[in-house]
Image (cartoon, rainbow, N blue to C red; front, side, top):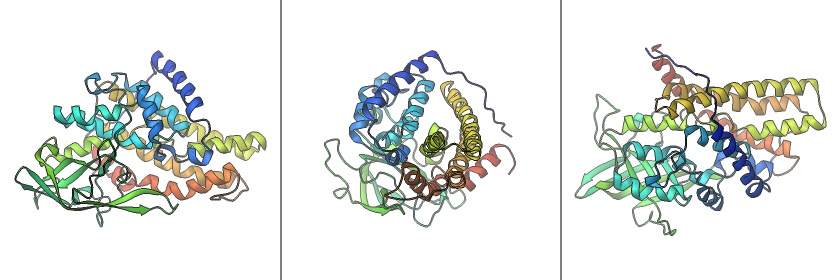
Length: 391
């Protein structure tokens, strides 16, 4: 049976200096973004903004300098992310590559893969998407059916991936594919692959490689998600990430990076800021109590999340703690629009109205997805229960 811990962590002095630098950068490069745009949090995308972050050394911050990284601490990276998220900066283009794909390649990739695929990420020039979910599979990742069949010199891929964020703009997909069937162990026979979707010069490789990307439009009319179809798509043997048939353990390690960061409790922060602005103009006791409770919850989640950053900085595996932060953070983020509706006598709106009304309207519709991404609430609680020896 495993136990979990959230030991208090104090951020180092270098983190405070970095916070000042990031705030100055945001004051120059993010000041004109409207609150509604800022509410997109880490899904907002601006390639030029990503390149500017790359120039400042704020992508791949903790990676080795050999691959374009900067060998800074997890605490410094945490502070940078925190400031970007609170400011609603458009970090979505490079987000997946920086958060999980790069660390995956550092842990499991070959030297050739690291040399090719990591330096462009740190420059803010290469974007990744993740090919995990499939039609009719729900959250059952072990039910992956898209096949990679061994042929001379590589593999042929056939099948479909769904809900693939950013596949229409990404240069690379890291896909989890089935390379053999084992009826007695569904976790066996899964392999991760690097699949090139476009060159750095913008040349689209998908049609040439037998890959079709179709948009999946959200209920807000936005295009983040995609369905990706593979029809005899060929990838060379060098596209395998890590061990053939050993992809399950690798993808579990990758998801640990996805579940513990400040994005797991700051996705609705723009609405909290709009609530504070509205209360400053028209204060009410009910509003002060509601915002005070939100800030208290926010402070607790932050301490837990910073503790996870401390474990990462020490080289520990905080998979269980990360799952707890993700689960509690999603509950917190989804409560904020409901609380805002209870406190303010305004209607949520889309495309018109005050900043408060528009941000509320956006998050009421968007926040329903927060308990799905990175693993559904049911899956996460199952992971936590197993980790604690309760099932």
